Picture 1 (cartoon, rainbow over the protein chains, first blue to last red):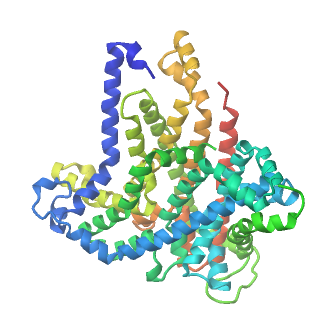
Picture 2 (tube, rainbow over the protein chains, first blue to last red):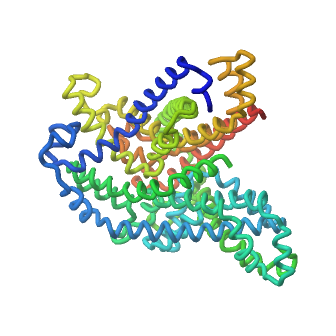
Picture 3 (cartoon, rainbow over the protein chains, first blue to last red):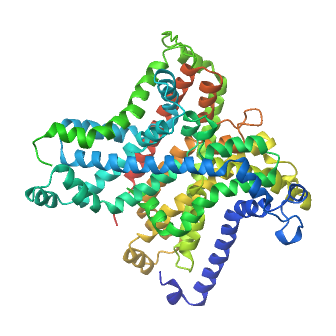
Length: 286
Length: 290
């Protein structure tokens, strides 16, 4: 890491070159976002004549697109739906998977072994291999599609295996059983021991899993599109899809709509950047 | 956990989670295998047992094999380009210059946004911005929208996927580079290893565990690409950019051939499982300890 101090001018020149290259690559990466922001503030005719023109060269600078997108997408409602689904499913999967993982680690019986093996194996099954029978069972036989609760239940089920796997590794490696034994001696029940002693100790892995799961739930399109069709229930990705279908020629409104979808996550990202990046890395490396 | 009251603990701790998992993953998966043996159309109550006929239909479904071939092509290019690019950027980022965290955070941004929205953003860039550049500069390459030409639309899809996935892989490679043992690197430099030799014989073997993870992630994600495919090209022009996952969806939910669609989904699953299994086995074998 101390290259610059031992290298001398040659090394410095190389670093400056690397820095310049990095900035160019970075701007290229950000290019689509820059385009969206610029064009979301323009009127349609300005976009068509010159999508590349910068803000100060055009006259029709306005926030009309945002107002139109906001109402046409029914943004508040879609945002509310996404929030309800994401928060409920994240809370549910965090609770259920940590409890299940705890059971599997502390009770090494046949059921535990079979359940854990099944879960690990199931992680390679892609969603597409399950979606058709899923629709057939929940849409046909049970007839419970078009309810938020069904979607929450499915999100929970699909992220269960990965979450249990992560909690399992953490509990096995980091939670000393002596602590729980002490709690039992003091008269705690199993439930109290878990929620008062073990669960607080899981904080690092909980924050990783909350970040990974909530991002996945918030952005998912395919599963919600199969479950929810009622206009009142659409989540943000779903309402973006139908909004795009209706307004695809109205570029300014579209760009404003896309930006509206992105802004909530970006705000969260700016605040929680360290945790999110840390969570994603530890989630992948495990 | 104590031995006694085992049944109660099972119900309290394990059952709710297991139930969710089984109801959403295991039962549909098994039922899906059964579905491939029926002629269900998604609506009627009649499901006739027709044996292996669906798999015969899969064999005759030329569109499926075309999309599978296209997916293979796509996966190979995406996996190779993403990993080389991410590895190189991560290498540059960890040379120790300022703002490393800022760049890393910026590169990761596309991964926070759903594939659907990303695809729409790029659709605008390809069909309006690039065309605008073409009109202004007269460059042939941007004369018409890439998305209306079969070959260029495929290139566009690869391009966007590389852009989307590389930020994630940069994070993992950066973590790998940061974890490299400094003593080993120093020893290699003192022994006179520079540039390519150092990369080939010291860095690459030590980075193998990061490479295993990144290859696995890019492979499985690329094979199952759907959201970006749907919003960027929608399979257009004329279904020439329809990837396997999208074909499965269309087969089941648009053509209403659920049995055939499910058979194709299972074939896809087996292929992905075998290929990622081989990849993990091959790269894990090359992992070394510092």
